[in-house]
Length: 81
Image 1 (cartoon, rainbow, N blue to C red):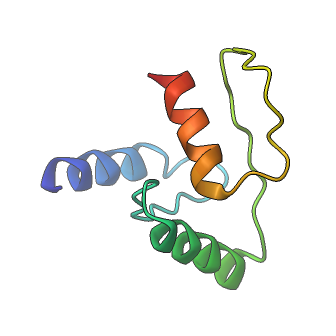
Image 2: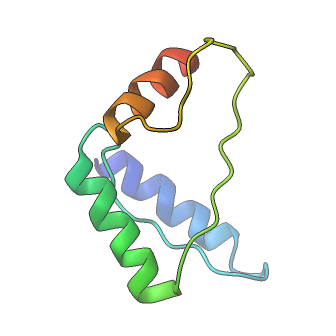
């Protein structure tokens, strides 16, 4: 965890001259409570979030609408690793 904190601090420092802001939020994407807490923080502090999920484009032939967040995470994790 200390290594990640150092990387985040270095990234934040390197971006100081850029426009925008960096907000580092700890979130274990395998835990629904962490995901919900992160989204709540974003909504409460920033008013909302826009998300781009960049994926390699593997077609599974299954509908994603109507799946639980855990099922979607499982699909994304399989596609990513």
